[in-house]
Length: 306
Image 1: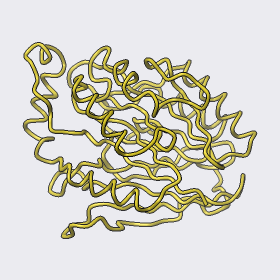
Image 2 (image 1 turned 180 degrees about the horizontal axis):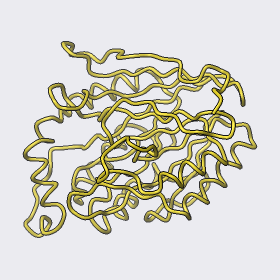
Image 3 (image 1 turned 45 degrees about the horizontal axis):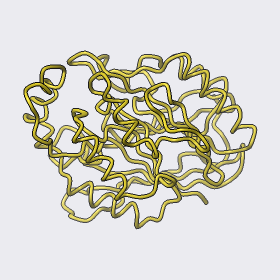
């Protein structure tokens, strides 16, 4: 059995001191949003409890699907690097960036420089910008393919982009790892399904992503961004492929979105007969300890027909 933990949208805080010069761009809208809403509804004590529980579950690997920071300030990116190092080894943790990690131009390049060891494929050089994706890591029977949908956008937009070049290179990795009989997991920040979020937050390139999966296959897609615990499905060549979201790890009770949790996947079987159980663990209403929220068989051993 291979055990994979997945969480997302940490939005590490509090914000460091910020200068007027740093606010003279899109960050001003994000700063106002932080002061009015996110500062109130994020509880970083929950992140500590979630990660403690996650590590106690002894996963074989951890996937983090973006938005480690809020405004992509240099001090935030450095704090996130130190936090990642405290969480575990780059060999055991795979990261893809989110839109907040690429909040303004050149921010993603700075994040890649700081977090590169956690976004580096086996035997490859660390990424230096969005062109360094996709990457491939093989851990036991599992192939982890990290793609980037993160890009700087205009104020009031949080959209992502999945471009043709990245789709082509990801398809090659899916073919290669599929031929090896590996359980292929694609990590992306924005959900690659229609209607999962508002137009101003959507992924541009959903059709391209789904066409890639339909032709080349995958066993599981993990994303963040929506701050919601969801399961969608998209067509693959051998049946439907689960697309799983997760609540924001730092979300406290009382907000519009569910309180923070993480996903724990238990993967067994072989090509054509994989079985996957999904357990969600996190903040339970009325409790201080992390507990089980739900559990379901995600893949039953026989792929559902498309």
